Image (cartoon, rainbow, N blue to C red; front, side, top):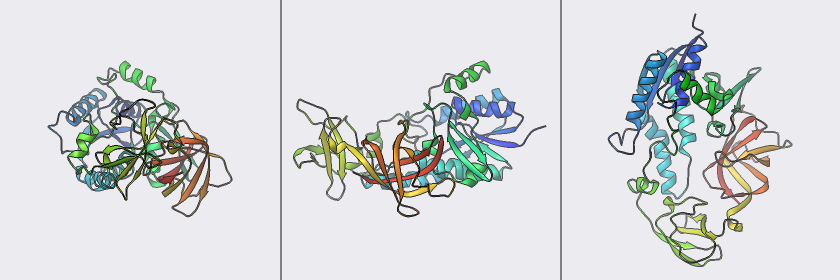
Length: 357
C-alpha cells in the first residue's frame, strides 16, 4: 500500500532520477513532473531543455512512473528573469538560482503539485530536512562537496513541511552508482552548471541581447585610469579574465563598481586590500524558523556556493537588516549575492549583501 503521493521534479539529470527511484522503492506513489522554465531559445544550440525532456521521459519509463510536463516560463520570466535583468542593468550581480528555488521550484511547482493531489514534493537537491517539535530545520547534506543548502536558505516552514530531499544522506558517488545499478540511462550524465537560461553560451553574449553596453573608465583604488570597461553589467567582483589591461606584473581583478559614475574599480594582485573585507551589511534577511539568531552565539557563514564555512559574528539591526563580522578577511565579497548563516549543520537563513568593507 502506497504511503502517499509525492510529485518529484524530474529535470533529466541523475539526481532527480535517483530521487524518484528511491521514493518509489520506499512505497510512495510517485509522479514525475518536468518543469519548463524557459522557452526563448528552444531552437538554440546552447539550450538543452529539449534533450532534458527526452531524458526525463526515458527515466520515468525505466522507473515505471507517470510523468507530466508543466510550463512555468511566464512565472519564471515575471518572478526571476525580470529581477535578474533589473539588477544587471543597474550594474549589480544577483543570484537567480536562489530566487528560482523560492519562487518557482518551491512555490509555483509546490502549488501545482498540491493541486494535482500530492502530499509532498521532492527534488534532487543535496540537503536535509529535520523536524524538531513543530519546527522544520534545513540541514546541510552529508556530502559537503555537493551540499546545496546555500541555494535553499529562503525556504519557509510551510515549504519545508511539504518537501523531501532523499539525497541528503547520500554521497554523489553513491547516487551515480544507484543509477548505474538500476540501469538509468543518465547515470553518467554531467551535472548542469551555470545559470539555467544562459546555458552554455558565453555570458557576455547573452547579456548583449537584453542590455545595452555602457562603456566607462577603469580606475585603480588610488584613482589612476588604466583602461575602459564595456559596461558594468558585464563584470563581477573578483573577475580576472577579460579586463584587457596590459603590462607586466601581478594580474588585475575587479574590486568594486562605482555605479553612480559608471566606474569600474580594478586592483592589481589577488590579495590587494581592495579585494578583502572583514565586515558586511545584509538586507532582505530571511530566517527559516522565523527567529532572529541569538547574537551571543558563534556562527559560520558562506558568501558563495561551495565556500568553506567561515566563523563570524552576527548582529541584528532590524528584522530585515543585519551585519556580519568575519574572523578572517573574505575575498571578493559581492553586493547582491547572498550571505547564508549556519549554526553547526543547521542553515538558519541569510540575506542579500548590501555592501562590505
